Image (cartoon, rainbow, N blue to C red; front, side, top):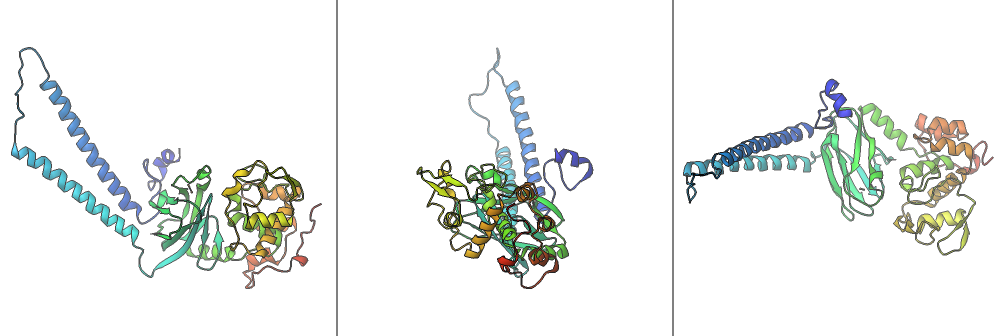
Length: 377
Ligand code: CUA
């Protein structure tokens, strides 16, 4: 257990709590402990008094109790006034903390858009960059504007003591100020369907120093121009990976591995070629055709208006490549395809290079000039 081992070394993380990684943590934890100790003290007092009275006034031969309860004004006023003061104090401090969490500091925030969907998170930064994990700078106020494209989700980073529902049809705002660099866990804290647990991102929140943050953002803002790599990038960042695996496993929808060019069985019994037409239709109108065994695919939202034709072409190029053993091997491992691996595979076009050099164009180049060195061997 991480918390147990860290008891010895890292005093920031206690037996009860994850690291205090945001400015809310100190207040939240001390308030929690205060309420807990108040409860402990009253529990002990009340149970001790109860046990004592049970013993002292038990029924026994020759003992007769009073028929009516004794009355003491002093006692009654005391046990009314003291708890009342305590609960008012708890209420006041709770309101104070809540107001602080609900009110982002005016004019001094970095605003990041969050989109939740079944079953992944997407983050969009001020420079237009998108990612599936959250990157933020340390010691800055972060404001999240959160939207859900399907059902109720909840954004929760325990180390920040920050949590908020993400409600379809509404834009919810939350803020926090990270105070230590590191990688922290992100949870969806609202049961949102059978793959709810897929929305847990272990170490998926990265608090960086300002310089690394800016470098990371510049890198994320440049979609690769090579169609195959661009398709993979979209797959990773636009939520496809939540339901379509690359290793052949069935998650929610069919795996992308080896599907291209095959004849697939539809739930209607009809057979159809897995080709450009089918891919495009399935992205824009997921409800049009269900593959046999995937009738529940109706869960997929339409990407019409969200993915351009060019992006669909890139995704198609990527799916085509998912027939190629060498490529599958590269993308199927835990970390996915790194720019270095993309180069080693032959996607060593200016797209990948653009990420290193920070070239201004960053656009998608002419696919004709940028085929992989050894496509579909
Ligand atoms: Cu999203 Cu649970």
